[in-house]
Amino acid sequence: MLEGWIPPYDATLVKRLKAADVVILGKTNMDEFAMGSSTENSAYGPTGNPWDLTRIPGGSGGGSSAALAAFQAPLAIGTDTGGSIRQPAAVTGTVGVKPTYGSVSRYGMVAFSSSLDQGGPCARTVLDAALLHEAIAGHDPLDSTSVDLPVPPVVEAARSGSVAGMRVGVVKQFRGEGYQAGVMQRFDESVELLKELGAEVVELDCPTFDLALSAYYLIAPSECSSNLARFDGLRYGLRAGDDGTRSAEDVTALTREAGFGPEVKRRIILGTYALSSGYYDAWFGSAQKVRTLITREFEKAFEQVDVIVSPTTPTTAFPIGERADDPMAMYLADLCTIPTNLAGNAAMSLPCGLAPEDGLPVGLQIIAPAMQDDRLYKVGAAVEAAFVEKWGHPLIEEAPSL
Image 1 (cartoon, helix red, strand yellow):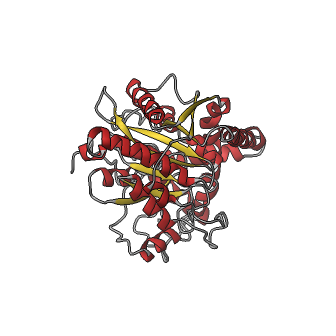
Image 2 (tube, rainbow, N blue to C red; image 1 turned 90 degrees about the horizontal axis):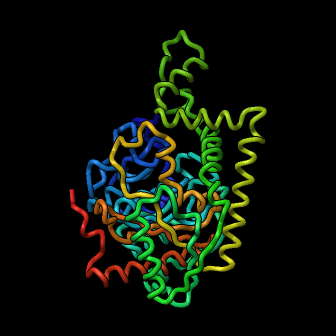
Image 3 (cartoon, rainbow, N blue to C red; image 1 turned 180 degrees about the vertical axis):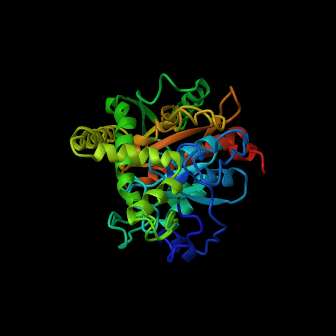
């Protein structure tokens, strides 16, 4: 839909990168309009995972994570709507952070689901992610959802990582059927490691988290059906069928037929249905109520703990094409990441070992309260340092280089 389109201005995030003297190498592959969990829905074709080129690098930001894992770039940027920074980080053995909603400007980003989208840093180490986070975060008057609060001391936290005396929550709902045995083994080992480092582990019961996936797949498509209405073939981007004999309505229909891929069409149709007369309260309205319950459950949990940990993804990277014809199986890849987007909290994924079944990376997710992003880096740096001490080198150095 936007092939060949050159924007007339930089996103705020890009301006801040340039102001920090960061070298922009180029744009990485991603699922079309950030819709997908595998980077197979790109108009340019799928991206391979550097650990195994027959497997997915995560999605929607698989290009960013693959570039890091292949040592093609030291830093990358992603956007996280339901896990699209953290999920690719998990399956490629890299670090990905979804900052607190509104703490990194969305001005200049292509909107998918405006109440969920959040730009954030991707890197190979926790400290690199913190340095990038600090460069891109902060209030932006051009973004109406931007939070006018100081950026948490993320770099300082990454340089002084410690979990001594912290209370770490483990949610009962983030395990069970559908979770790969090796993923749970590495997660359980990570929890034991946190105990060894001086953290107190607290079991949490958050029953509404089981509804997060259903709520997300009503809210996100509904917002995307509204946001993507601007791609009509009349203002910018692709225009199809404009031969002088067709109406504007026909040109718009032909443009969308030619320009949108199957997954984007699926979500637009689902969202338009959920927002239609007679269904709005039953579907979209109910999903928003569930979202409120999830947010309250997080607030209640954070009264008991400083951070929450979980597996980032239920499985390691799956083969390219394996879930292409099964959207529900694909959507389950974001099972652990979606609740955080619905609540607007901060979250990180970092490597916690390799699954014994397939030798592929497993991600540990750390979740912190809104505007307490520094807690992610404090815990993440402590865990990373413990892994480095245990193995003598960062996990990512085991990844093959393209």
